Amino acid sequence: MSEPTPTIGSREKILDVAESLFARRGYAGVGLREVAETAGLGKSSLFHHFRSKSELYFAVLGRVLDRMDERLRPIFAGGAGPLERLDRIIEALIDELVEHPGSARLLLRALFEDDDFAEPLPEAEPVEGAIESIVGRLDALLREGVAAGVLRRVSTPHTVQTLIGATIYHFASGEFGETLLGGPLLSSEEVRRRKQEVKALLHHGLAATPATPGS
Amino acid sequence: MSEPTPTIGSREKILDVAESLFARRGYAGVGLREVAETAGLGKSSLFHHFRSKSELYFAVLGRVLDRMDERLRPIFAGGAGPLERLDRIIEALIDELVEHPGSARLLLRALFEDDDFAEPLPEAEPVEGAIESIVGRLDALLREGVAAGVLRRVSTPHTVQTLIGATIYHFASGEFGETLLGGPLLSSEEVRRRKQEVKALLHHGLAATPATPGS
DNA sequence: GTCTATAGCTAGATAGAC
DNA sequence: GTCTATCTAGCTATAGAC
Image (cartoon, rainbow over all chains, first blue to last red; front, side, top):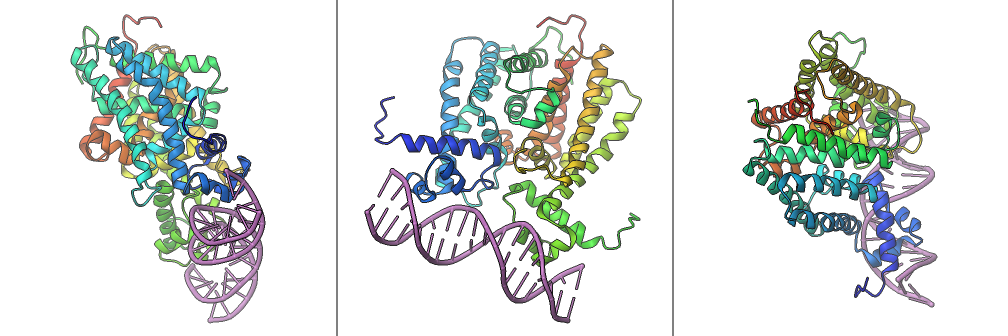
């Protein structure tokens, strides 16, 4: 609200437009001319705000991750039990993906498209750090649940992957997902159902039961 | 083996190279010059084998889906119970993703990147049909399991999405996945663990238990 | 079936006026 | 802070010789 930055208007608008376009068509699939013109600028004006295409891209990703982190941090740090915290993380994660469509695709791309940039770029570091931070806290939460005996003795990294697939992939799946479900992905009804399905799978599939069968 | 096509060599080599490149960098991120030269040809010679870039892309995707279909079809059609068929589908799917690295990324892209082509291309139709066919049989298998009472009353389309995330996303996750697991994704040890984790989650999370708690 | 040459276009990025 | 003009390089695709 009281940012020290003098000019907020253009920069934010560029980020909004770029977020939508990069989410839909990926880094290589978007040209800066289209970004600029959709934001109501000439192409060259972009370079006044961002020194390169990759800097713009990682600024977009960084903003997505900041929003996510802001939403998840209080839950991770909260005092509830591991299983309840996990439920609330899943709900908050899904809420964030739904409230900012495009986030899911952007994040999914960031997680599996590592060959887009041949050389490691300095502007990518904060983004990688933010991802590691969130994923690390999720993994720690799972380990805590296993240690406390409220979760089965799963591999926590594998479970992180499964949760990413169940949330981020699902809301990134767009047209395919809608064909599969036979309706919109983002309707409050389908969102509620998704949360319920993921939490149910998690509870039945992860929660320790009195008699846990072996492998 | 006894294809009626007279010249197999170049075409297959182009498909191999294109499969690897499209998997790594996506449709827009790959130029035909690089494909051609990696395959040992001049750029123009590509257009003798494929009339356009999109035709090459969907030929690559079609081959991936054909291999997958060939592997999964006997299992879908087999006479085992729904739960055992489901286990075997997961194992075969993972085997296919592991034996042909690149398939996972290619398929993941095909499932969530629907905005790459503004207009519907005729060469995309067989690919869409192949995806629908496989997904439809998986959904039918899940519905059969629910009807037979060996699976919980899950939403089968949501469960399809979860299974896609748990398999295709996982093996598409590349560098991120390896950082998370702390080692190679495709080692026989990690592959075995992945199968085990997914099947365990499925059995605990989907299999009907004597006392099924409500939502 | 592969090649050279080229058309026509767009990309990311820079220079410099205002 | 936005603009026009321009640079170099890349792109898909075609034409036509061999």
